[in-house]
Amino acid sequence: MKSLLTTHQLEARYGDFQALFGIDMHIQEGDAVALIGSNGAGKSTLMKSLCGLISVAPDSVLLDGQPIGGLPSHEIVRRGIAMVPEGRKLFRSLSVEENLRIGAFAQRKGPWTLERVFALFPILKEKRALPGTSLSGGQQQMVAIGRALMSNPKLLLCDEISLGLSPAVIQDIYAALPSIRAEGLSVVIVEQDIDTAVRSAKHVYCLMHGRVSLHGASDAVSKQQISAAYFGLEDKEVVNT
Ligand SMILES: Nc1ncnc2c1ncn2[C@@H]1O[C@H](COP(=O)(O)OP(=O)(O)OP(=O)(O)O)[C@@H](O)[C@H]1O
Image (cartoon, rainbow, N blue to C red; front, top):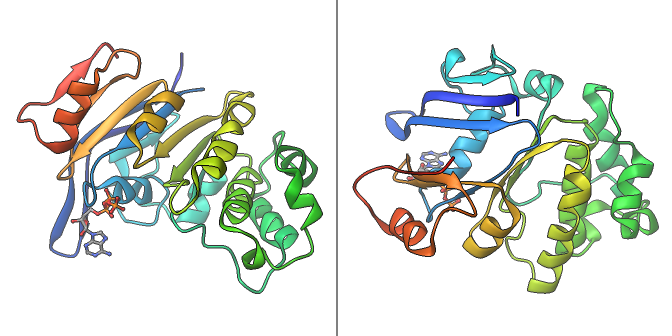
């Protein structure tokens, strides 16, 4: 499979505080990667570094071999990375449909249109004229995912899409993933629930204190390896990538 995105010794800082240290990550075309780790491990910081919300060294993030580190986020969307942010971040004053249409600002060509998003999440078609923020948490999450898809990304970054949702709703959202990935779209899923993460991904990266503590094929990493990498292990683990 062709490499889509790589990070090389990626570092990220908030002022004097260093949150990420030497992250090497590889995402192939069509890949599904789960990013796990305890609170404060650096998952959101890594997602923000990939989509231009945090400034990082140009060569530390390559998309299709081109340096994109530190580019403004609208330029990164144009190049094919879209983010479903933690907390959904819908535009309060806009309807469901308007929220979705905003995702298409980059005018990238591809399969995702308003009708296609409505086919994926039919409830959004019914509620298209309502304010996005009047929907249930799960429906708002669908809007956030749909808005990101409207930019026709090559890589979709999903930051904690199940946060605050009931197990049944989480199941509904994850049930959409195979359709989302059907046309070769790569996804990175940040997820607190380790079982959900590993089940829905081909590869797993675990972060601890801003470093990769484990990475490997999800069917090759054991529960013991994951809990060691999640809660504390001195050496970096690499398992059958
Ligand atoms: N805006 C910020 N300013 C300063 N430090 C920050 C900021 N955002 C995050 N941090 C710090 O960076 C580190 C990594 O945080 P990050 O939010 O990336 O972790 P996370 O793995 O996503 O955690 P969570 O699961 O709680 O969202 C933490 O020590 C956090 O306190």
